[in-house]
Length: 312
Image (cartoon, rainbow, N blue to C red; front, side, top):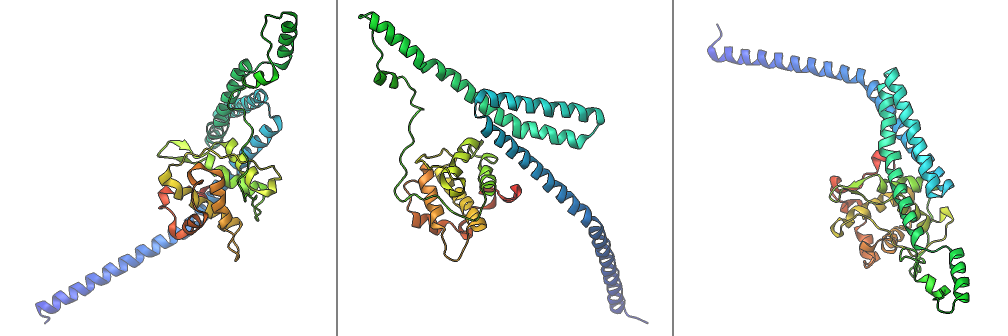
C-alpha cells in the first residue's frame, strides 16, 4: 500500500506528464498552422511589395511627365486630368464592388496626385503674382519711347529695372572649395528613389516632410555625377532640428553602405555632402561627422528616417 508521500509524488508526476503532453500537442498544432499559413503570409507580403512598386512606378511616371512639361499651367492641367482619371476609376470600382482597387486608386489620389498638385498650384499662384511685379520688356521699351518724347517723364534705365526683380530670383552661390560630385554604384533611379524618401516621410516633431520633392531632385542633380548636371552652391531647406542631425547622418550612412561601400572607406565624401548642402552642418568638422556616421551611433529606431519600407 502506497504512503501519502508516494501518492503525492505519483499524482504530481502524472499531472506533469499530462501537462507536457498537452503542451506538445499545442506546439504541434501551432507548428502545423504556421506551416499551412506560411504560403499565405508569403503571398500577402509579395502583394504588398508589388503594390508599393506600383505606387513608386506611378510616382516616377508623374515626375517624368512634369519634367517634360515644365510650365506650371500645363503641369496643373496634367495633374488635374490624372486626378479625374483616378476619380473615374473609383466610381467604376464602386459599381463593381472591387474594394481593393478602390483603395488603391484613392491612395494614389491622396498620397501622390494631391500633394504634388497642391505644390504646383502654389507655384502657379506665385508665378501669377510675380508676373504683375516684373514688367514685360516690351512694356519697358514702350515706356522709354514715351519718355524720349516727353522730357519731364522719368526714363527707366536697364540698371533700374533690375531693382524691381524680387529677391527670390538670384544667381546661385559659388560652390565651396573642394566640392566634387559623388560617383557611386547607384543608378539615377536608385539615387532618386532613395533620397525621395525625404519627401515621403514626415518629421513627426515638426509635422512636416523632411524635404520638398523639387528640392530633393535638385539636391541629387547637384551632388551625383551620374545625372550629368551642373552643380551650384545652393543650400537646401530641410525640416530637421539641430538636435536631430543624427537622423540625416544615419540616412546618409545607409545610402553609403548600400551603394558605395568598399575597402577604401570613401565615407568622408558623404560627411562633406552634409556640410556642402545643409545649413545645420555647414560649420561641422568632416572628420567629426565621419566618426559619428556608423551603425553603432545610429539614433533609436523611432527617431530614424526609415528606408526599408520603401525598398531602399
